[in-house]
Image (cartoon, rainbow over all chains, first blue to last red; front, side):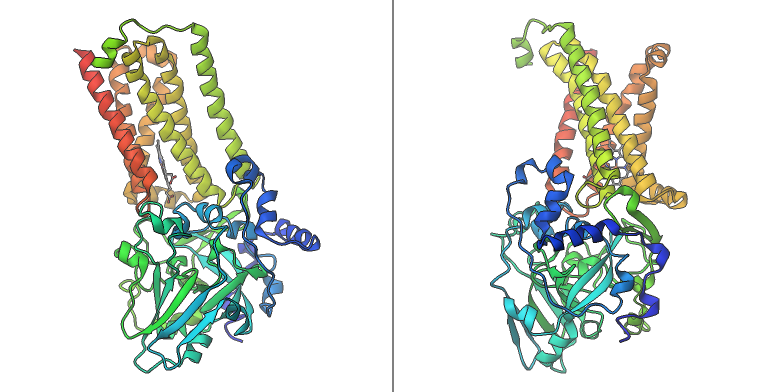
Length: 335
Length: 208
Ligand code: HEM
């Protein structure tokens, strides 16, 4: 299939570092019959050194998933960002603005029961409960690059299903032009939603949006897992969006609502700082953010400062198959 | 001032205690800095080690700088002249942490892409401000070598007034570097400027 293994989208050998440590640790945990953030956290010396007070905290339980492997998995297996990095360095302001906050403060987040509604301008509104998220569609693995607007990037094996599939099932009306998403609003569980300052001043719930044709693109994934297991809360459990050609903040986490609309929906970062964050937020090395140059990026390949590679940022994060969606648009204006 | 009149007699402690405090400042600053860098090199920090180092050294520099500025008011308030001797140690480590901060930016964040490093310093106002603060701190660091200090005579004191500028710029740099509203930088900003105001007042009073 085109989107799974387009040559132009795949990573070059020299962009990435070996990751034997990650693989061997993974094997070890598997052979112990135990996979979970707790093992990874407990193994890290930092957990001991800096987290005195959290040593006795519970750790969110992730469950192994069954899925079709990314056809590209063999080639990619050497190239992923270690799971420990992807699950301890997160922007998820609902749990605090520091990148280390989500892993610290999200471990007790309840994901079951869950309810995800797909409604708005559709013929057939759908509600998925927690189990539906994993059983309504065949799960497939997608190994994607994730490019953050802050200038760093990772390579992450997601598990999920195409967003387009569920939208199709809901049968959009012809008046539907956009798709709007919302994260759960639960201040009791999300400390960032309780206080303006812990939550970075975002007006919660966090909302995002796509044009309908963007949402229908086969690259757009609703992810329910990563690294072979269900998502941990800091990465957006139980279900999140992944749009790999856009900056990471578009990939909204812990979604409870998907609504089809006829107007461009508001998006959280755009509301907060309109001249820094646009609706489209396509990865574009030629359009600098006022705070960060976007021409190059720092690829996080391991946990040492020496495992960080600076590489050129590619248009649409290298997913050029989305270019036709934006034919004729001035991407400087629609940033 | 009311309180300083209550503490009417000067405070004196054994010289050894002051030496002990200075040894502590030296060892804690060096050991902590080396330990965190060691964790970052060996991949033992959670999350992105580059961001961690950048934050750790930046906050460390500001903490040390604010502490060093608090020494003089403390000495005046308690009539505790001896404590002035820890001021230099704190200032020196503020500068060293700030240099480590820039080093992380150059070596690990932008990995010696000099063109980009220069353009970031020039084009991003919050970084320009941090850069000026750093230059001032480096000048103060060099001129606080005893030999240089002696040679400079009275002009040393007027030069070292620039520490206020460095501190103000560092606080502006910090609050400007944040993407959206956060409590900690705002608290720092308020405390920092209170410290600067206190210092300014005290200085005026005692110069007369
Ligand atoms: C050439 C000089 C400097 C450069 C290039 C520089 C660069 C930076 C950068 C890139 C950040 C991170 C922004 C982000 O997280 O996105 C930062 C944050 C910071 N810097 Fe600097 N800086 C400089 C000087 C200074 C000085 C002199 C101080 C203090 C005395 C300082 C204190 C801080 C603090 C406190 C932060 C915030 C850390 C945090 O977010 O926790 N910086 N700086």
